[in-house]
Length: 64
Image (cartoon, rainbow, N blue to C red; front, side, top):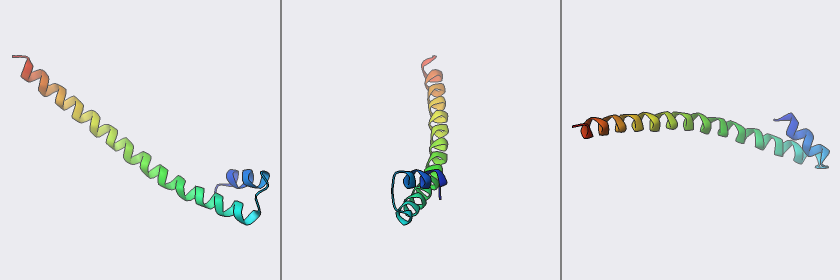
């Protein structure tokens, strides 16, 4: 559970049980977002590598 979110819900006047459930749900989503960010980083590197390979092949083909 993210304590800052829990405290914010309590400060906004949300009942304790609902604030706890909401903070726990957000912490579960945070883990999923971290995984997605890692996968996105790998995809960015793959696209960059493919772009560099394509440009080098085009350069070699068009040089003649």
